[in-house]
Length: 330
Ligand SMILES: *Cc1c(COP(=O)(O)O)cnc(C)c1O
Picture 1: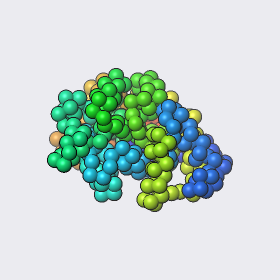
Picture 2: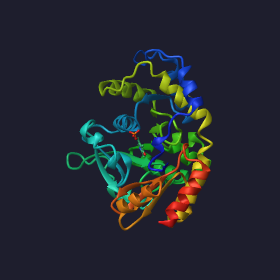
Picture 3: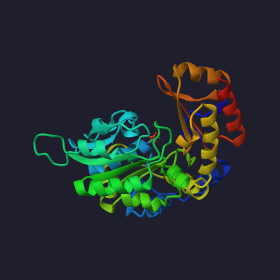
Picture 4: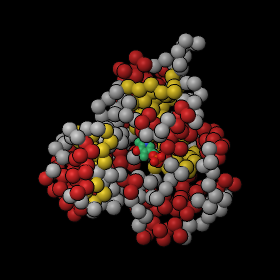
């Protein structure tokens, strides 16, 4: 089986396991795990931010990040197929009392006109107050699409004029960075707060971070503990993240090249697949997925007519070529 369902499926490499086994640890709830501290400091510095906090999942990093800029009863604006809207099981409403309104864009990007029409930063006791705009980069369900840094800069100045915050769901911001050579610090400049994952293309078994101001991160530590996300000798996992940052960022370019092979096989313009995710339309997505599985290739149906294939660390060039052949034959 060649498994292209998700880049979360990667298993830690031998070298990553060795780094994990050798990690120096302490009690992170006491702030005494040196490896977690090193990871948090390193990731904050990469984005030019004051601080970062390690979380078990990207969903928790997003919940903490959005809650740091949106009070209960206020709203965040996001794209209709954003992970925060579709795939976090309503956490922002159920847990932190954040409401959402969505714009639609075929590639998941911020649509400045729609956003301008939706914005209601402070309309007194009549309308929900917009407190933040969220951008997902790369965009998962739109097919690993990248929002250009110039677009993000325009959004930033627009948000500044309106007095609202910018959140970046950067679960795969590393892929955007590698695909466009945009420095990570540039993403830090356009966002008040970010969430990034180590457990996707970077290949760590677990781990994400929320990145922002020292004050926002201090509050996030309280919320993380409240929600049951305070972890103890978790340097074992942070070591996997540090190893991934050292060894698995630049190689994402290989995943992107493999995804272009799959795009061609699925009849999708490779120019619309800049990173490691290929989304294609099929009249009956579950049936197509079942036939692919019979032929030895696992992909996902992410909608009744939408299939998704994702390349990652555990898919070699030869496997990508083989999977492309199978998908083309279907
Ligand atoms: C995977 C993902 C997350 C976080 O997911 P978890 O499974 O909670 O780690 C957040 N945003 C996007 C866009 C994702 O693809």
